[in-house]
Image (cartoon, rainbow, N blue to C red; front, top):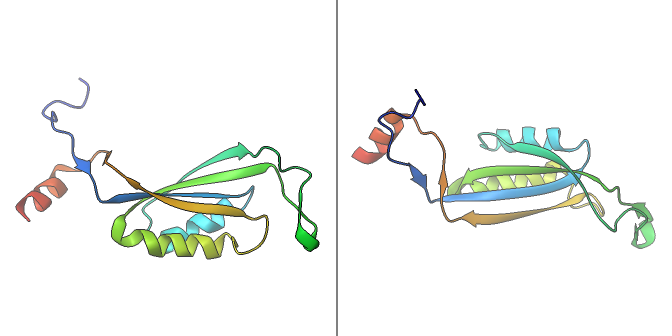
Length: 125
């Protein structure tokens, strides 16, 4: 048994955005908590290294940018994405030089397991 018997149809979601937030290592948890309070259902966090940033200083502040990063992926419904984006930006302190960046891209289509009762509800309108 594969667990997919009777599930030949893929439920595709088309009204979704991918929010990608790159932050200094150790900052992701607080940012994700803020995103969840803003309506995010979950997040994927992974570690990354930046290139060409180790010894760079930003302006007169002399802020050294760490090469160690955490990357946060959040998939959100289009109508919630702006609010989650703003909360992530503030929680990750992205208005501070060298703290990271955030961007949002539309997803052409996305699929995951959707419980049959939810599919039914949307099918009925």
